[in-house]
Length: 244
Ligand code: PEP
Image (cartoon, rainbow, N blue to C red; front, side):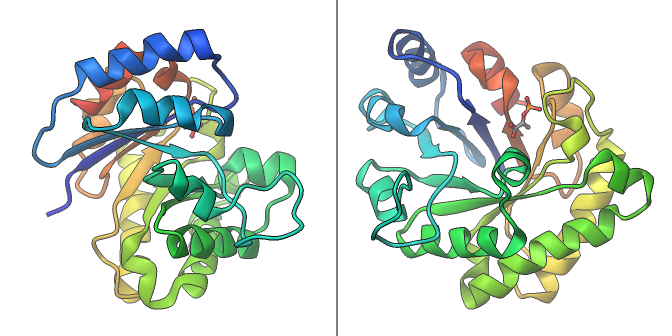
């Protein structure tokens, strides 16, 4: 049975002093619960801090991106093996902000997912449509295309990943997909994963998730948890979401 996984995405926020309080609150506030998982994806420079604060506890940690390459002359890139060195459980790949500001294309996202998995770090592969695409009625087509690139890149390893449906129009806008809107897309993604032999891949919902709306989203049969941006900067809020 699939449980509920909540993953915080701090984006480019934080600092050593600020993180210390946040990480201590997460470590102290989260107890292992059957079928519930919690992790935070922090900026690269703070991976060691997250590891030191969270190691030995129940809260996992990860990164917000990973290189598609294993090693070499790729200035500024961070490999999956480097993330594994710091105990990362997860790496987000294909976040819409990477697609939008760094020109990441579907094939690159697939390659990043493959590289992450090869290093033993679970990729959280993000898909999601823009408002214009939703208004044009192409949501299904867009997320299917984005997911297909990951399916094609991973082959038999597909069951080992996590997928996140993050409608771009709901990220950081305060505008959340309704539980029914989320369920509709998640069910379509589930169908596509099932056809690829990976029915039980967890599918997280992301886009302005808060403690006040998480329970209704998490109650949907194909919503297996949340990828939480802004609200994850408040440890109490993230804990409340994870307990939803
Ligand atoms: C995200 O960054 O993945 C995200 C969903 O952000 P927010 O929760 O702030 O919308």
